[in-house]
Image (cartoon, rainbow, N blue to C red):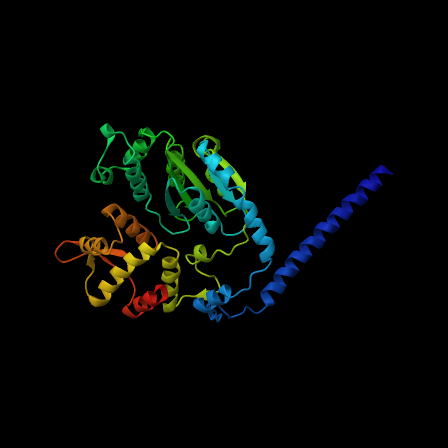
Length: 361
């Protein structure tokens, strides 16, 4: 009896295997008989990127009252955030929506007694060394006289040397710190392992505090336990704002759109409008020079002289910080003049440059 049952089970298994084989080869025959489409993805008539972005800007916001109450609840937390910074923690903001405006509002209202350096991590490239030089120059003003160093000495140092200086520096006021604000510490210009290691070491410096935001779900994988809990010493805050990524999104191509000449004008205008009035004025000086001298760049020394005369900058350091921001946003580039001087120019056509000036006037 048992043998008969065993034989029946084997027979059923064989039939199942045969049925699977038939279905497999039948599927292959059907696939080979189906005509392949000759259409290509390049045949898709995609909308102009400018039109798509314009349409996105006109999307009506929803739940404004609820979002306003949510933002008020975050504003009420500002004293707590400042206390966390004072106690040596770094603030890490996460949650759906752009946190750029929220963090900048916190810095402008709460960190008025401190120097603030902003890193826009959503840019494709970041000049980390220039950021470290700026931080070192700010700390130099507070350094005990015997440890003072010149700007020229800082420029010649490596990133390792600058981090060592920032870590070991002693200042007169022990409670003094410089706050580094990083929009999108998980951005394309910062997400490599070496840069994250440098930022972690920077955050561990005695007189440096950090406020950063993340948007990628896998961002915490950048850091091991030592980096997250000891060097960065993150204090996590869930602050969904539901705000559109207007500025951040300008630096990412839209999948369903192709670029246009007018897009560079719009991008430059949005970036400039997000900068300080002084930075915009410095850009105008350079733009006006380029419009009157289209075949040559403007020497940095000439730009400094004009900006100093118009009270737009107080020192070469201030001008350099503006230029670094322009270069990071690819608004300004450098080229070597025939006499060997480094000159600045804006990589836009005359017509586009005129439109940009009208946009920010």
